[in-house]
Image 1: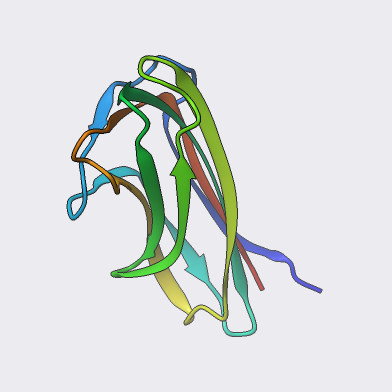
Image 2: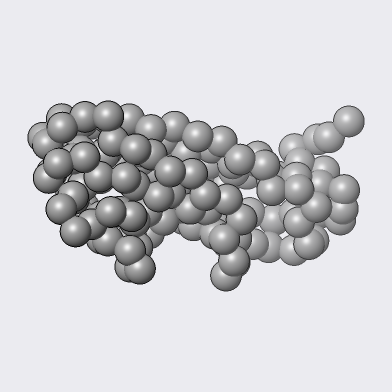
Length: 135
């Protein structure tokens, strides 16, 4: 049985239209949200959850979302835009980071457009990123 050890959250925008940040093309990325969380001794896990509102600004971009713990990527997911230019879409996903070394860790949510030659996208909100450390 796990108990809550710590929690972290970052909420740069809470509603659709609350942000307007261009998502760069690969190999660049943009940090959308970040927080820190403490973890206890293994076995442990950090439950991570993100929601991001995006808008295609040119054609149908593929947006790669990554979660970084400290300096390493621990999770990625690809959102293939199902909307055309100027339409908004909300993407939500969850991940579990298991057996994290004990201590304080930074988590970042980053995004990049993987097919930038004729496609582009903006983050328009909401953006929420949360983590719950369990031990």
